[in-house]
Length: 449
Image 1 (cartoon, helix red, strand yellow):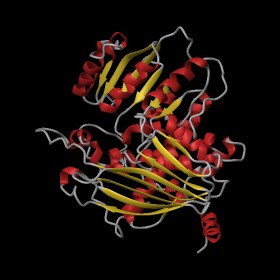
Image 2 (cartoon, rainbow, N blue to C red):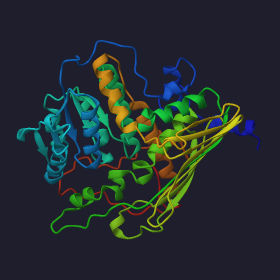
Image 3 (cartoon, rainbow, N blue to C red):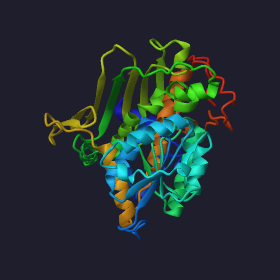
Image 4 (cartoon, rainbow, N blue to C red):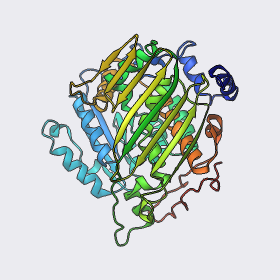
């Protein structure tokens, strides 16, 4: 089938632009009718009245005190000398205390880590207690299954938000995040997402060149990320199922979404950004080869996904987490006028008439984790506006549809994923709540609804 015929067939599957779930409709509306790099980038809107004056402290609260929460807090403290950490919340007291000790050992920021005893909240409802305080900004860094609930509560409480990726673990969560995004926009509240490639100088310049036509029309793309395994924490005497699964949240789909959503969403988002669109459908496969024991929960250890776009372009995305194997991290875009090859997150090489290189041999390191916070607080003080919620949610859905194609063995369309009723989170969670009953997915037998 030739390229034009394939494009026409795929366009017929594209969701109706009258349906709010359409991936193109929001971007076309935002960009005045054309999809550009800026449509997908975390651009700052025209200046409004500053949310925080240049002389005021910005009081932040951390919800989720693990490694990423600790890192995000350090990024925030470095971003603005007027930021003070004044509140912390975590389900587990020991994790909160450990995070606080780490932050207090950082000499450059220790004097701005000012968390009184009555501003340290623990337990599964600790987020509610923190949101009832007078913090200006909350950092959401709990396991992803809680993200939609915590984001909704934060926006309802009138807080600006930095939210770690991914946005959700299921379609119900994605729809919730889109609703919270719209509400935040109405209230003038920020949502900055932890998909830091969109704030990475190398990625921004590469994307702009691609969207300016450096390689012409994209025909096909490939994204590969192969990494090693992750830690496992042995079950402790007396732990409930909820306590145990929370301590090993990566391996439980209701908490992490599987590693395709929890980790590879970074690369999926980068490709949605550079493609300038979200896919019409995908077909995938995956399974468990090296992580087969019960301690690895329900997730797969490898995936291979083929995404199809309305333009006729295709994206092959593959990832694995397997110990003892080679590590690979690369992307390749083939266009009508050239090729772009990326290695890691900061090295790009465009060949063709518009040849360009970034990061080759100059030791550049990733900056996105810091620049997203720098941009957040600079905009908060200047009167700009940031809301990354739309691409935060939709890139997560792009990962979810791939997971479900691999789990079920069937093609999954964008509209099917957006409309699915799947909701993996229990309605109420207590330490003794029965955890969701899951089995490892078996393609051809596992269903998606």
